[in-house]
Picture (cartoon, rainbow, N blue to C red):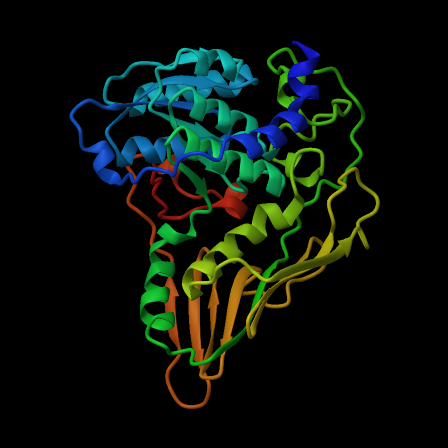
Length: 381
């Protein structure tokens, strides 16, 4: 693999951000899927997240999955078999280990990206250049410069890029917005708290080991710094390393902040500040913070994020959640439920998660993946 493909990544993204600001994104709705011919779909990254998104798209829209790409041949073959069982044609998609070869065919209407964060910008921009609309898992990018480059590419090629923050299509939270927030039951809102107290860092020290035959570790690492292979990053725990993402703020905070901004119709914050570090869990290899506070400042309102990957949650019923404080009550919300508690007189109002009835029960939330569950969330391109 050519070294300059990875080493020139940062300069490429900076240049793309400056040069691609051309046309505005076209308006697309679900009518895009109503045409008789199914839209051709490709997925880059066939781990749990990307595969779950793909299965939901197959259920929700008239599509034909024609291509899958992953650097892990086990993931790739497993997903290909499952796709053939789910899509109407019964066909297996064509398989790739290099996304550039897949996109080089230029035969895809939609590309889903389920790779680690450090790959999002490069793969999204290449998919847009290849003529596809893009659905990319959150966060959109590792930093602001990458995000700007992706937006610029979407404008240049007149394509839609949607980021999978998911909560806007979660039924009980839609009801919460309509019945509590929009009806003014909170009164004057003056403060928001968001949190995550899950134990999400890889605190072990596994030894270095040979890269397994089924994994192209160099390609998996791609534009990130090359770490010795120790088996940790590849499955899920890559999020606990700064080489590949932006920690728990980029993983968990983005869901709750996006939800709050949507519910309260907030724009960009005036100022953002953050403090934290590794204060307690110093024994392991993970290098993201185990304790962090971030403040998103708006006019007469602060949205405060707090996470700890050690100790007990401040509110055991809402370990990963948002709380909106008004002078008439408080609203607590999570992926699993919500509660409105009025100040003074009035009855509390409770909302439960709505699970969809699935044809394939294995698509439902499982305990070992509950941290990233997206109940009743449909993919919208």
